[in-house]
Length: 312
Image (cartoon, rainbow, N blue to C red):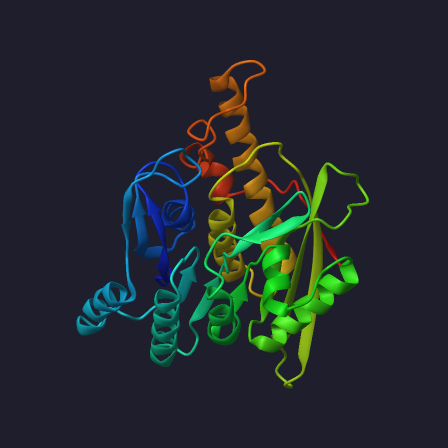
């Protein structure tokens, strides 16, 4: 009988659609993980819609929920997964909980998607309060084992701009030196040899050999762009990377190929369905662009590899 692997996922939650915990829980369960979800926010829908309503969990409420788990001695986890957060005290409380859980289980792996902002038309901007950046830099990244920033977030965390693959590798080395053994820059605006229709993702993983030396594996992936704005893709990416690095701990290449290929299948199915619903020549609405997650169950479980990673 396979040993139970349990994830504590502290992320946003929506009633309708797939972002945060809604985007992470289903694929993790399909891939064999038990998921305990704490909802950092509870909204009617994601904020890409014209309207949303809901509640935001504060740090005291987070601590109260965790204390309930601790008092019942059910606070032993193999993984912690975190994503979008807007409050620095909440984020600091997450760090306290991760530290406590690592004392309980020194082999616990913390997967952090440091959601802070992105680039539009070449210009980067933050969509969370700026006071979160020093908390990520000084407290979160040092306790994280795997981080999945986009290019803009990697630049914010390192304090360095990325204009080339060499600079991206140097930034990933800086991020390694801050704590995480695995760094994946999930998207970048670096030019692809295959043309403008492709975007590049980069990964770097440090492993310690039995003799104590450190080996670094670096990979690059070129992914076909989809001309639409999807919400929840980063949450889905981080969850699947958690799962596939667990199943392929010594091959970042295979873990990323399976993660990105599954993403490709989900997005292609989503855009095809969205265009069919919106009608010829019309732009799909946010509701029509909600990720087709349940319909993609087979692709999440056993993705056909359509994106190959290059070992650098």
